[in-house]
Length: 117
Image 1 (cartoon, helix red, strand yellow):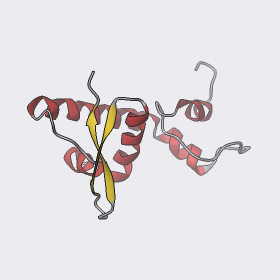
Image 2 (cartoon, one colour):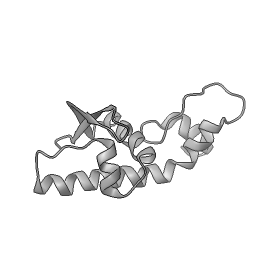
Image 3 (tube, helix red, strand yellow):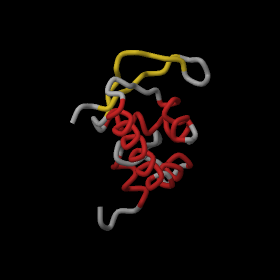
């Protein structure tokens, strides 16, 4: 990673860093710039999610979460928490239960649990 620009790092880093969809552009797209700006906050949010799941899991081992439920529990925006669930799923730290519950907008949303260590 030494010698790489933040844009190169973001382009190579998903799911460890936020992703973006545009590829092959000559200069950074707004999506790439936004992803680069979320590198540190995303790591922090992923850590909070895992920590919360572990703490609650000790008290209630069968407890499961939707991204929107977690956002509410952490007092964070659903727009910041939803992508972190996808990243954590891709990293193999959490997994889908197969259940779906309504999101804030009422649409079905995947339910997740902490993957056993």
